[in-house]
Every structure is written in C-alpha cells, then in structure tokens.
Length: 516
View 1 (cartoon, one colour):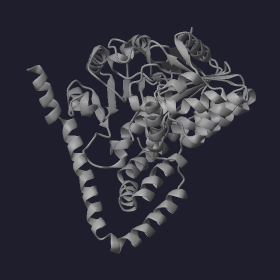
View 2: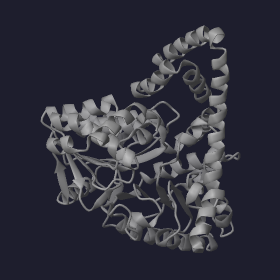
View 3: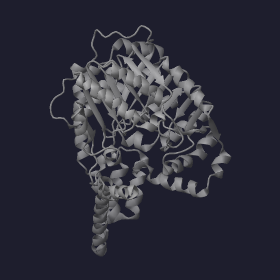
View 4: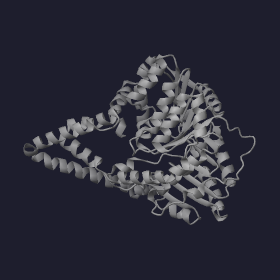
C-alpha cells in the first residue's frame, strides 16, 4: 500500500508535472521543425544562410571554445532545428535581468569592500604572484584581500556541523544562510531548532536555498513554513516548467554568516549524508572552512547581494557589519592573507576557474586537488599536464564510488592523457569525495564550493576562500596526505582495462559536457 502511495506521489507530484510540461514544450519545438521541413524546398536556402550567420556569431562570441563546439555541431548537422533551438536559448531575458540586478547590488556593497592598501602592500612585498591574483579578484568582483582573519579548516562534515551549531547558539544580532541542498533529517532539523529559537530571541534570521530543492527534497511552499517560525526565507530561482536558460544557473554556494564576525563555507550542504548520518556512495568525504575576522565582511556582502536579487527595497548594508567592539579570542592566530570570493555565471568572468588556474600555473613543487568531478576544458587540461611535465607533483583525489554514472564516464575519458603526462590520479577507496580543495607549495590553498566541471566553472553561482601563508594551509595539506593513505592510484593499465563501452560513452559525452 505504501509503495502504491509512493508511486502516486511520483506520478502526480511536482517533478512529474515539471518533466511533462518541459516535454510538451520540446514536442512543440519538434513539431515546428517538422512543419518547416515540409516546405524545406522553399526555406532550406534561407535556413542554410541563417545557420551560417549563427555559426559566425558563435565563433566570434566571447565564450569558452567547448561551449562553441557543443552548439556548432547540432547547428551544422540539423540546421533548422539546431538554429531555432540556439536562437531560442540565446535570447532569454530573465538571465540578463538577474545579472543586471546582481551587478547593481554589487555596486551598492562596493563601499563596504574597500581594499586596505597596507594589506595589499604587505602581500605584494611577500609574493607578487599572489598580489596579482588579489588585484584580479578585486577588479573582477570587489573581493579584497584581508589580513587579521583566522581560518579553521574542517576535514569532515560532521566536525564542521558541531562548530556550526556552536556558533549559531552564540548569535546575538543576525544569521545569514545560503545553501544549495537542504533535506530534512538530523542535520537540518538540528540547525532549524536553533534558528527557530534564535528568531524568538530577536535575532534576525535569513535563510535562502536553491530552487532545485523544491523538486523533490522540500515542499514548494516550505519558505512559508519557515516564515511562520520567524525566519525570513526564500528560494533562489524556483523551478518552473518552462524552457529557459536561467534555470540552468543554480545557486551552488554554501554560506553561513553569524553577526558579521564568523563565516562558514565549503562543500557541505544541509543533509545527513554530508555528516555521514546517512550512507550514500560509501563514506562521504567533505571539507569546509570557518573564518573569523575582517574577511567575513565579504561573505556577509555576498549573501546580501544574492538575497536582494528578488527584493525591491534598498538594503541597509552597513547595518550588518560586525560590531566594532567585538573581540576575537586571544588564541586565534590571524596570520597570513585571506580572500573570500564569489563567482557568477552571468558576467562572462570565470573567477573560480581563474583562481584554480593561477594555483596550478604558479606551483613550483606540488599542487594537490580533491574534487568529486573531473570535466575539463582545453585550458584546464593544458595547465594540469604542463604542471606535471615541468616537474610539479600534480595529484588529484577522486571518488571510487561516483554519485553520477555519466560524470564518472566523463572523468575517465580524461585519465589517459592526464596520466601519460605525469598527473597522478587517485580514487578514495572508502566511498565518495565531495570536497573541493586545492593546496600548493605549503603556502596557498583554496577551499570552497567550486567543482572541476563545467557546471561549477561556468554555469553556477559559486564561492570560495583563497588562503596564502595562513596556518590553515598546513591543515589542508595534512588532510590531503591523510586522505591519500585511503586511496588507490589509477594506472594507465587500469585506464585501459575500463570497459570499452564506458570509455566510449565518456568520449561521446565530452561533446555535450558544456551543456549538461
């Protein structure tokens, strides 16, 4: 009986409705194509010319070559349908409106993200290369470099969860939370209980989660349920059954800010598998980081920039800076430099990718990476292989148990050329790696939400933290070495022994990877 009820929920649920609605819209496009095909004798020449013009437009567009190829092939093979579909996707205005509002919000917060010239001068004196990266991040999105910030690294989600609860309990003024995945269970229920209690105490609580959750994890009207508990809540870009490209740009960020003095980010969402209370794909290896100090201002503003995309009233941003009289514990070591940064898929600036490339290209001794996915464009392949060829130890830890089969097939399609160039690839034997971590030369590290795939690097809203000569860098590298002990290295022979169907599927999927 329960099984029947479950099937009925699937058949008559929101997800089924959305899928059916989208399928109907695709069928309408196909029907339009077939209708035009009847008159191909009359219109073929016109569409051939239009297809040629569209291809010329794509070639001259400021875009990653992989995206250009992914569009040009279907346009060349099926000129009428391919051209119609490209034009339909290209001239969507909702994404442009979101980008315009986000840019306006960033302008409003720019005054609160001014660069301290002494900090930049100190960084320039120590490392011109890191200062150049800081200059880029400030110009690309007003993300300054900070000193006077403590960073605490968490090698597992369950460890960070305990620290998150502790900081939430101490909130006195406000709590901001922005997450990609939220699912009811021990983790979210424990946090929600604190949020509800804090709201009753007069603490301002704002909670935003990505609209994908409303498809299967949470009720569509869940924000109303939270609002009844005193929590200001909303979904980012709710899923609607319409063919539109802006719905492809998800909010993949994970941000928690408490009172403007403490912030968390990393790969850890609010669901039980992230703290290993629920087993999915074996042991779940994830990482995160907590900041205390001046750099938290960037995360505060990043949250408010995204929150106010759907707001009409002007925000009083200055009200959410940390209290000047707040004193950090004396035991916190605030050495080194910290740059929190965000990435938008709508501004043509691939911040997350550029940070990763900078770490790889500047590495002298080693670059160590943990990532759940490996879907690379030409630039990233060249950077990784060249690093290995010039004697830099280049090592990547991947999951042994993938969460998505197609992502695994895509990843192994790169193994051959990477391994032949000297890149070391390892698989995490206990299960799934969801960490997004870079570390290099005992001096720099990146911890954040950015996967090494097209979705994170080009299509999602993301965030991360770049660390230079901060004591947390040592902890990130120690965690990489501890994790490496639980891994098995993939050899060229292993790659050749993968079933030919999987290798073929991965190579075929590479053509469409930018659009997946």
